[in-house]
Image 1: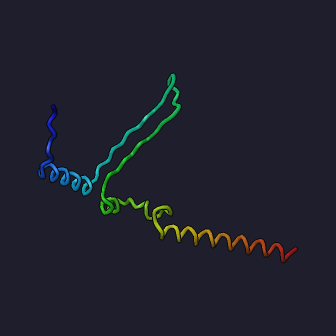
Image 2: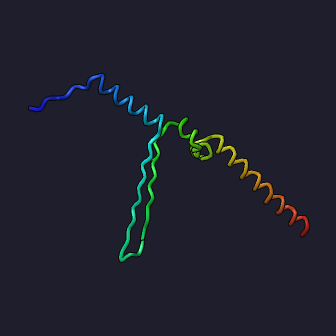
Length: 101
């Protein structure tokens, strides 16, 4: 018969402290995978993983989620506005060609 281990509050506290420290300081995991046959490189995959809090990431100059239209409503609005401006320019050119014809 196996005995079930009980989780003590000290273990949970240690895990929470570790997680807080990782998010506060940040941690980077990097690696490369290369596939070669007879010294001919066929495929290279570069893996970079950064685990940090949003505040720490922004402090390091990382804020790509603010400009990704799938993650930010402000970025989506800016993308729509840009597309709208481009379409208005194209429409103006087409109308000019029609008037000249």
